[in-house]
Image: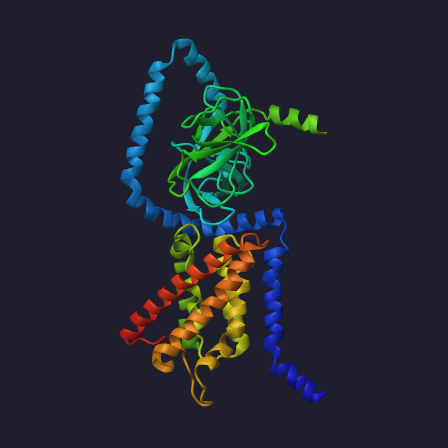
Length: 270
Length: 172
């Protein structure tokens, strides 16, 4: 008996090892998606401040480039404004008043994993909620997944679980944009109808159907067109307009619409 | 373990965690090569430490990195695994004199043995890390590439660190 106790005491580190390793693996595999989200949010309240500080240092070096981008965007918007007629102006203004945008800074970002996440420095306090679209001055970035109080986690296009409805600019046939891993500058647009006339270099924009994004935010340009296996749809490779590995400021599309569309869909799904 | 070395080790832990989550995590050569330099802490555990102490240090370090990287359990599991093997691996490369406290470094082990020790430690840790991260296992070639090139990068980082700290004569 005594020698057994001795044995246990002498090898207590083995039991400790088993305990710690089990704990880690439970954390790693025992979490379902909902619990992972909670981990991400609570972790973000800890790490948000740290990442914000680092992003401040980055910002210092990027400020010239970002300035140039802002001036460019400003010029583009100004030109658009001149082209609008009065009646268009009224309807655009009305549309804008129901849809808004919140500017946020990207404080953490990864493009190297298979499922990537972006952290931004605005949260529920600033009116951000899960499901809102995120875009930069170049184009679509992703969709808000979890909104913490001061920080939010965004699921970018570069995440296996994202799917964004897109169409060719100036046409109405649409498909869904997905990412299959690997190259962070390219994504696939699938389920485009077979008959839609898509040519290389065409611009792909958001549809605005789901009210996640406003209509017409650029997504990318067509790089390659293939017929999918079933023969009824096209598979299109898209060069993304926005370099997600290199983000500074982004806009979050906050919709002030009362969620009527979503409510209708839920009604149908029942 | 006396108080002084505890506090020194705590500072080393904080420094390595910050270095990893603020800078090294953002390195991604060719899309999937990332150095995991934080295992430097586990590499340097001396032979006088209790094995349970080594395990606890490594576990909490991994957990801290997980909290900042949004990867629950991943680094904790692989760091604890490496910490379990560390004392045995040291013995593979040098014969321990019973009364001698050995801090693994090129001066105490000899340059070639220390390099071999570093390489084996890194390969073991990175293999476990990338396998756990890639579950469910899909593409084997990508997994092997990730392990091989990340190992090389971490190994080079550690050699440079050893060279710099060894040359300045500071022994942590």
